[in-house]
Amino acid sequence: MEKKICKDCGQPSLCHLNTWLDELSGRLFPTLKLPRKVEDAFDVLLEKFLIAMKLAEYRADFAGADIQLRSGCFIKEMKKRGASFCALKSASGFTNHFKAEINGKTFRFEMLPTAGFASKYATAIVDDKDLAKRHCKRGGFPVATGRLFWFWQRTKAIRSGQEMGFPLVVKPRSGSVSRHVTTNIQNETQLEKAIDHAIAYSPAFIVEKFIPDTSVFRATVIDFDFVACVQQVPANVAGDGVSTVRALIDKKNLDPRRGEPQQKQFTLYKIVENETTQDLLAARGYGFETIPAKGETVFLQKDPFLKLGGDLVEVTPQVHKNNMELFRELARFFDIRITGIDFLAADIAAPWENQPCAVLELNSAPCIELHHFPSSGTPTDPAKALADMFFKYYL
Image (cartoon, rainbow, N blue to C red; front, side):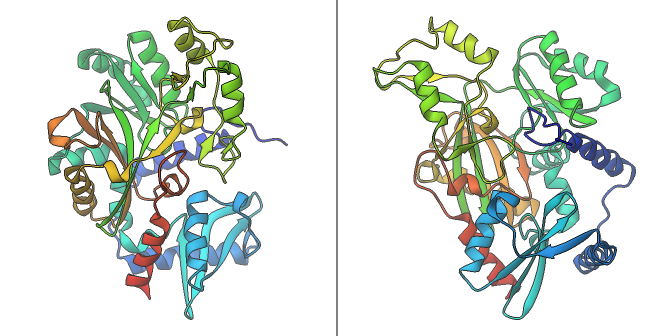
């Protein structure tokens, strides 16, 4: 039976149920502060049970399309250093669980080898947008004003949003790559739709202030030192003075680096055309047959989401030293040696203290591939930094 794919997630809609169950179980059974050895022993025990019951097996014949690209980047780097890998495969296909062997030692990890560099308790704080926001406040880091609500508090959330004042943002409490996030909400009707959109993915959501005239930057910090930063830019085409908007879109979508949202081996995706695209063109008096001037940028989406065809611009050399230190301080404050930080600012080359800005969220298993495969700019190499850290502490 063909899986039903969520247009927003690019994943099977069944994933929504998993998110709901994870969120509700987390509320009923809060994460315990357990020693790392206890956590690892439990994970190994569960793995052995699944294998013994023939519900899963480790296989070495996985391809790049079978796993997340961030895992593939790390595995490729580690293989250069003599490591071999197997991926856990279940009845539904390869999972994000891996086993690595190097120098006679065996290591297990999920997605990226983050477990050894932060406890599950610290990871739970980082990956919970509400807890992370509150933790940032305690540390004096800039955050957007916002509140957490559960699905049964829909009316309360609408009232709170009105009190905060528009424009607003609504996002699920957990999740990554902007799944079911709505930005620049201008009125109550849009707020209601945004809340329903978030609840479809998660039972808990956040309503917070939208900061206009800013860009989203993703900073990846490894071992409290290495920092790489990319800027997320809304889907657009650049005029050449000859081609129509339609031809420019088609040409950009033919770029072999762009795939469909459900394809794991891509970072960039084809431009999505929808009502927003038509509205943006109409606002400029343009249509799909308009020929933009040479060098003119025509935006086709408002949000910089990759799933909508957004671009990634590597900007690490332009990041102000104060912002670099802010990212490192965040990682140290959360005590997590690998993290992705979503940061909102007008100018990454200017110090954060001198402009409106906010730490949007952190991720414990960041998409390091964003830095390896930007649409423009010189790629950086967080996979190498992560492998260096792995050898430093494990081998």
